[in-house]
Image (cartoon, rainbow, N blue to C red; front, side, top):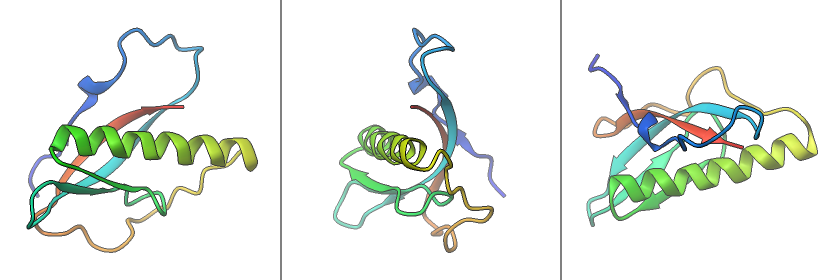
Length: 102
């Protein structure tokens, strides 16, 4: 299994610990045939996005995750994390872990 790539450098270095919660989220970054990338958070149902570059796709899915996580926390107080990924990781996908601040 190849090593996971990490994009933790996207974390806000000015964030104070008491300014919310930080979640480490697994994503699959998938190159698209027409160009750009789609991105899936396989451990949180419905968290998907896309972008023209890897960086844009990661930022877009981070926004989607922030919205979904905030909604779960406000309505239920619980996040429905899955213990196993939704489906299998596409062969061409790049697996990364990102930090998401809520």
